[in-house]
Amino acid sequence: FLIRKGKKEAVRKIIAASIYELTAGLKLPTSASILWTIFKELYSGVEVRLVRKKGRHHFVPFNISYYRQTYLIIKWIQEGLKTNKERVPLKQKVQAELRSIYSKTSESKKNKRNNDALVFLHKSNIHYRW
Image (tube, rainbow, N blue to C red; front, side, top):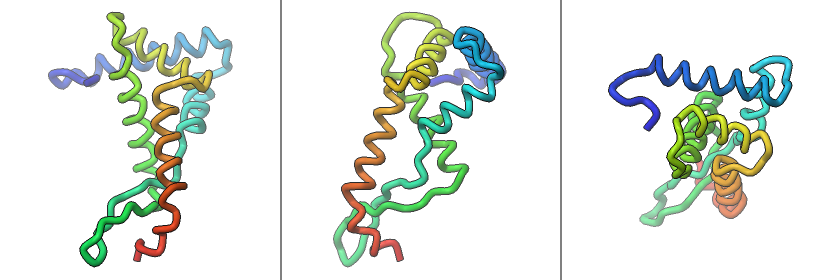
């Protein structure tokens, strides 16, 4: 979705410019502060996976690594960008999504809440992890 024809550098520039402009707009000291806020808002240390036991399927919560947490955060942000159907440049979509994460009204936050709800719903299946 973000990278077309392998143009990673173009996407990196768009994301860096969006974060820089958002940092300036919100009057934050550094861009790291907004990245930290985004990570803190979308952090989830648990994920629900499907486990098959005795011919039955169970959704089981598992602790996840830092790399998986980072992957989920990026995935949720991408899904939030995909749901934005406005006909504006990608840079503006990224800024809008990051601003909405910062103000706690984002599609990415909805994905995180759905994940947390699934974890809470299936917490009784934890004994299937081993």
